[in-house]
Image (cartoon, rainbow, N blue to C red; front, side):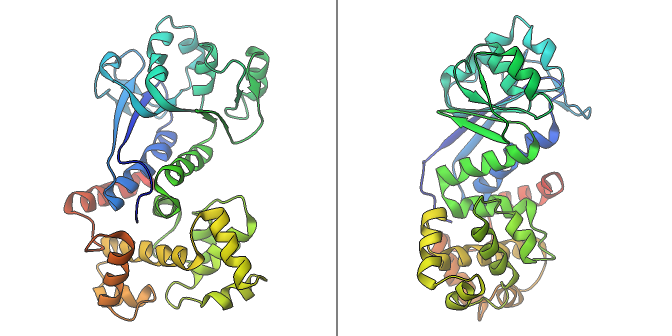
Length: 326
């Protein structure tokens, strides 16, 4: 994939006690995929409220990479609140931990993170949300915040969300905004598409786009990776003209449908390369290419990299992380 923005992305991740492992994974793992698959310059630091090791809601312990005072500025700050948000909200050290927001280009508050930001006054006059079970109480407690019943809400540089599914969508939007729609597809498909069963419905879920027609088209593309449909036929199957299809993809995904289809096929090829043990010729055939050399040329032309195989370090990281990301 070719990156469209920026040369470097720095991320600070601020955790609070009894945070959700699933939510942390939904926010962090897509960034890891983009870093490894695209050789993107993305780095992150794990930070904790109180500068101490914390236990997740399921009992796993994580230690901070460095003290809060040494964190420094970042492009993106992820604030992940936990189950003990009520006691954290009354902790005198809360404002000290949340000073990180002043050095962040953008802030995402997930789970009960919005409650903590609201308590510190950062969301006054802004639209925000959190988990639906807490939303009525949140609205009554923080009357200066415009509580919105939605999976996620963006207001300027502030984004808030509740569930793990909403957090995944938020970070995928962030990936698309910074690195382009192809990077978003790679990051989403890594976790929502089963490479052993590439049916259209599953890969359509990997692109949880609000436009129903986009989801339908991507599902058809995914169901025909081995024998790609020609675009005119694809358009007819979806009740559209070829021109309407092209205009829809340019508007919604900022790329032609043919290029998107190619990204999808190459993402599948990369997955098979890392996971299946198949020969290059077999992988090429399963992804709709006439030969291994044709697959290599397509990947080199689209990504600018000589080989579809990630670096050894990235491949090892990919293999180790599959269990947690799925």
